[in-house]
Image (cartoon, rainbow, N blue to C red; front, side):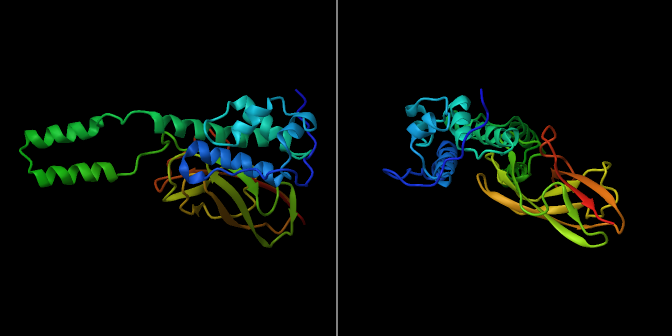
Length: 272
């Protein structure tokens, strides 16, 4: 398959692409992102996406993908996205981002369709202990509420994140020696779990020892489907150096949320 595709030029024709309401569920939210991508690419017709931009999927499949009634296959999704991706883009990065969004939408749709889960074993054990000890109803309820409110340890089922963009200081940038700069990433909550009390934590090692940073920076609260920007202030060394610093999302105790995912990082050359 030829991964290169021409950029859809701006220009209107016919009826404007309808955009599903992202608040109605994970599938609609995913279709909303596809429809928005199409509009931002100039809103070409599905016939043009196939004939001119090389989308190897039927017109009906492409159209259904952006309506939000059901989740498209990954193959259809990628043909939709690939055909609208500007020439010269990092297709591996684009594919990784959209695959993460698609996986999150599929997981969210599966959970919405599943029957209510059985009572958690831990709650049943708490109830049994309370009955054996003759706990009062009030005391038992307090124990159950406390158990339910405790945040689960990461990683959490249904939790997912995706890199969106380097907002400042793209990788490979040259920065002045001895001066601070602010690196900002944009990431998206592509799962079904709200983000609260999270941080980016600097990983040890690498080629970043010359650049000084905080050990942790906070991640603002982020609802599923939302994107958030996270910034870190970096003190560049006075002399020539190369800094590559990696970061992982952690909870307040330093437990990693996405241990198998690629870390965020910045890579700069410090001028002498």
